[in-house]
Amino acid sequence: MPLGAYLTLAALVFAIGLFGVLTRRNAVGILLGIELMLNAVNINLVAFARFHADLAGIMFTLFTISITVAEVAVGLAIVIVIFRVRRTVDADHLDLLRG
Amino acid sequence: MTVETLAFAAVAVVLLASSLGVVLTPNLFHAVLYLAAALVATGVVFLLLDAPFLFGVQLLLYAGGVVTIVVFAIMLTERLVGASIQQSSRYLINGALLSAAVFVGVMGFVVQLPAAGDGTAWPADLTAAVGRALVGPYAVPLELLGVLLVIALLGALYFARTEP
Image 1 (cartoon, rainbow over the protein chains, first blue to last red):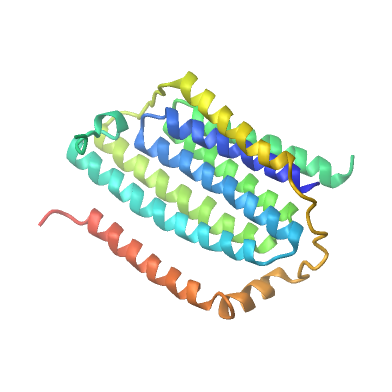
Image 2: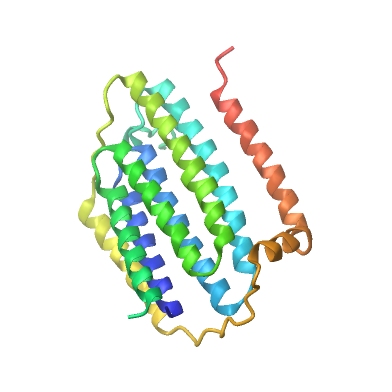
């Protein structure tokens, strides 16, 4: 398959993830959309690494995967704390910091 | 149609369908299961790109770790509410328009892609090459990653502590 096919697939997944982030009300749902977008980026990195025979893309993907896992752990911990305090995980109701 | 083309088409269909499931299904728990399917499909894309090591990492960390954490979070919040969380969406039209615009913008760069390298210098044993690179040119980022994981662990512990 040509490089463009992988990039198109990744762009589609990225757009779908962005749609999820924009339209979901639930904070966990928004996090799931972010996961999709990060995955699309990983596909891009690995595709470029493979087609240019450069290991840097693989290493970058390794690091983004690890950092994403840490991000999800902390993000969900925040969601659970917010739920304990506010009894809701609806992002529209979490406007404490609105000026 | 070669075998590779067929495999790519099949994986692409599974990946796109499960991604749509993640953003469209009203039940949050089903969305996580669709996300697991999408993550495994992404791993298969890595396999098609001759990166079996990343396939293993993807399965272990993403499909194993992330999905487990999200399921835990949903279980915790559902148990506290006592009802399954149905989630609704808003701004469907605006979101679809903006996503389509971003997709078109990205594709604008993809279609004017310069010719890719031949990729013949790809290491035969990727795992060994990655291991050597991790203790060679990428040793400092690897150490920093360890620090970051410790910080994330401490942060999650701080948030999860019981009130004094």
